[in-house]
Image (cartoon, rainbow, N blue to C red):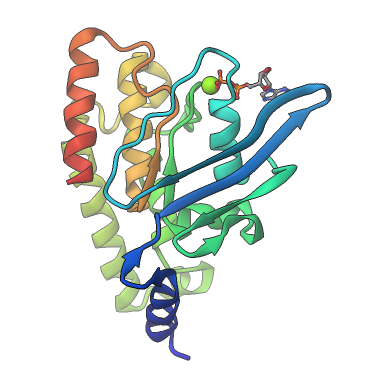
Length: 219
Ligand SMILES: Nc1ncnc2c1ncn2[C@@H]1O[C@H](COP(=O)(O)OP(=O)(O)O)[C@@H](O)[C@H]1O
Ligand SMILES: [Mg+2]
């Protein structure tokens, strides 16, 4: 079956009786570290187009849940279904291409690379040229490169990173680095965007701007 038809069939199977299933559904997920029970039968759903906040004190298991969704941590029990498919069968390097983008509580940028290059790395899961195509440089590769750099530039503008676009990330303030992470996560055009402690370390004004930005991205 051609890829487009396969996707349509999968989506049809994902819709039951005219009601769309949630984009993400987490059911009965449990994770323990030795004697520490980090997640104990967690279940919830996230409908498409919604913004859901996960709140809880330090150590409640929020980051652990994000790490399960990105497949960085295995689940002891339960299932995670994203866009009609169980994530537990997807390797961690396949997560971004499926349409799940994320940021990290403690930031995980390539610190010696520039803002622009970090964003370009985030775009990698949406590009197709491999080693040989890049070597031979047929017209498709040149077109893709042009598109990729235009997309990166659009994100630089959206997150107001123009002034630091060609600066190494390590020398930037924490709040700016957080915006770079968000830009990198958006570069893969995610259907689901996971933000781990997006407001930590930001001042009152920055938190307001972040809220407006997240709503803007959703719409
Ligand atoms: N890699 C790990 N190894 C051992 N324990 C962990 C690990 N990750 C998280 N934990 C433990 O799991 C619990 C939940 O942590 P975490 O998910 O970071 O909470 P939150 O993000 O809500 O603050 C804590 O008790 C934490 O110490
Ligand atoms: Mg955390």
